[in-house]
Length: 492
Image (cartoon, rainbow, N blue to C red):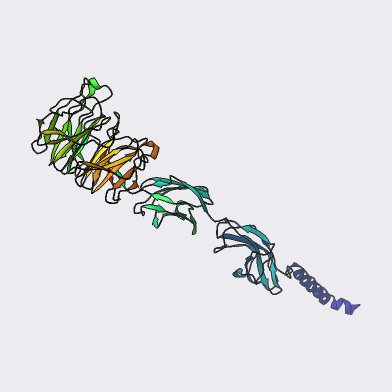
């Protein structure tokens, strides 16, 4: 008994140490035998890219030596699949992700998260995602346009920002993309596009979509200039002498109170209008005008009392003076009259008649009949006169020496204004039936080419007086409520 009492303290100490040791062992967490993880639904799915996501719930004994994603077009991809990305070792549980590029648009993929520990490789659930189908162009409007015009492209899968989008007309890239939505792109046609037929290509995040039909690029550039200084009017005449353009006469809606007798000179270099000496023949509209040796001849027409006039006056821009020449001796009715000059002589013809009159050194004489009574335009290129009948789209050229007419290729459209000659070619404005475009006529090949009109810049444009100065054409918008002047450069 005494021995037990003697050893009791030692026994109690041993028991205490054993109990504490057991508690410490119970408090140590048990290390899991194997890693567990999940695959989440991928996000940011696009044409060729996606963000893969997963999470490790528990880390297995010995830690994770590698983790990442595997993917492919078949179910349950593994480490042998073509698509794999390793994120390396991982010491703690938690989410992880990886952006993938280089996928194929319009494909369905399977993806699994994976993790490797001492026990082997574990995989998360098999998740699927489908990349966006490639962009397509279904249509665009207008199908014909020029630089500065806005084209609307319709299609599918345009889901990108303007910065992620590029548009080409042929091989020329557009500098201005106005807006992009999933089904529509608005873009401004750039300069430098090859004239004629071009394909439109939209590149969305690196993927190309090409139009199946051609876009027709219309050459020419319109630039707004300073308004006409003489105010609103119609039935005026325009002509050019040297490097200056001129507009004179005309009237407003009320002939009696708004018929004009003024003359205005345009300086293209300074873009300014200056009023010159008033027409000495009095107020009138619907007159004729032609130029011989830097002298303008203006006359005929209708005065403010609706009286048809037969006088003709010549204007010298050097002296800024008018002087009268012999009166016209042909038909003096209210019929519309047209004029031109060839070989230092002036000519006048009358709509509704086949008469052609020539004035040479102040003397009028009648020439052979013109080939139509429906005259609408006359113009001269390289001292050869051309006569147009826009009503039936006919065109002839005149041999002044032989006094004969030869039929040429017909007009391609209805013409509202024509005969503006520049650098050996003539330019015509079409009517609303043809979208107000411009047409270029080349006499050496007897051919027509469509050019850009004003319709994209002016609602229902109306073309009035026109003249050529230098390498450009200047046109005043027609009608009594318009004074805008536009410059047209056919070379752009």
